[in-house]
Image (cartoon, rainbow, N blue to C red; front, side, top):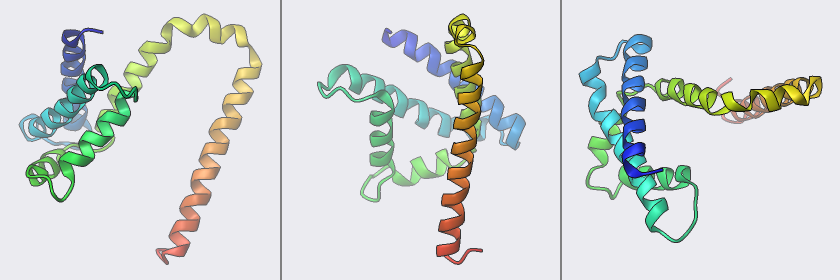
Length: 148
């Protein structure tokens, strides 16, 4: 993808995050705007890093590293990053991620249907295992920390 395409997608995602944050969590658009700009800037820097740095890491890895560096204690912009991104509820961006994931797999529906009933059973086992595993780990950690 070209940088302009990434930029347009990020603008669309930013608007979606703002709407989700407004509707779902009653955070005003202008209150969300600095945090959205920070998140989109980090994301765009990650895209640029994947193009410029010869180490072939996924965009998510670069995004995580840049975000950690921007919010680390020695960063001069730490307070602004933490305060502005703190206005964005964690689940607001997930709305857009789910929408993009749904769009990206929509052309593979026929291939999924060819897999038949076996894929449904595997999906149920994967979701059940993930839920139970998460619940067990949470129970263990909460018990070890005496939170429950």
